[in-house]
Amino acid sequence: MVVRSQTKGASSSLVSLSFIWPLRLFMGVTFLYAGFQHLTDPAYFDPSKAGYIGHLISQYAVGSPIHDFLVGTVAANAVSFGWMVAVGEVLVGIATLTGFLFRVAALAGLILNFTFFLSATWNAFPFYFGSDIVFVMGWLTLLLTGPQTKQSIDGVLASRFHSLAWLVAAPMQVRGVVTSEPTQSIAVSIPLAKRANLYPNQVLEVNKAFDRIKQQFVSHRETVTILEFVRALIISLGVDRSDTPRLINGIQAIVDRHGVTE
Image 1 (cartoon, rainbow, N blue to C red):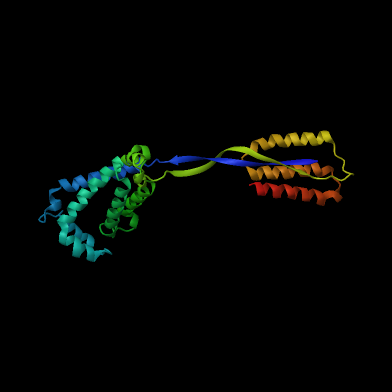
Image 2: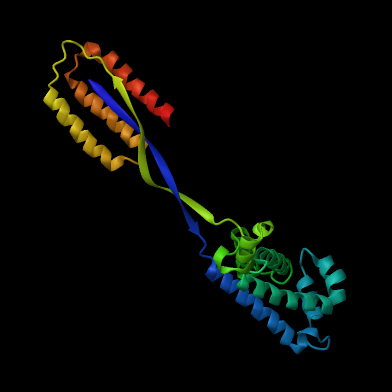
């Protein structure tokens, strides 16, 4: 009797995941809106108004882990920092929406929101009541994924200038098995005892049945191997018990050959 075992070589397909537009739009529009709101607010740069950036910084410094930095450096140059924040928010918003220096903008937005988290929303309890920590995670996601290659200025620049390839992050990839192709057929002969009562027609029918079943599991190597074991055991029912060790050695040879080819 000859038992045949075939190994399968699986090929993989890459599925690109770049559905970051909802997050990209939200972050870009929000920062653009916040920047214009600060620039058009007359109280933001007026020390005589309650909404003056200097007064806000003094409030944020209470209980903040960066209290000394806020009071000693930021508050002393409140107007300058106010302009930096407002203009920075506008630039980050534009860069995010257009995909120009996208990852640089995402890093800048992350740093800015993390600073707000340590100051403006540090005293929010529980922490998820403050929006800045959520924005930090949003910017981190955009920083890691990068812009869509064909939907950003960075993608155009990277395609024309290889030195700017770092601007565009490689798309996230998910590997999945889609097809299987036979590579090599291995034949292992299992000697049968002379007293074995095997009927060729029955053996042929069993082999045909298992071949049909195997077609449903061509991409599952482990399943195919198990099927080969079952096939051998069914056919071996006609083998005398004294011949069992010889049969087991033959099955072991199939397993060894199968493992090497993988």
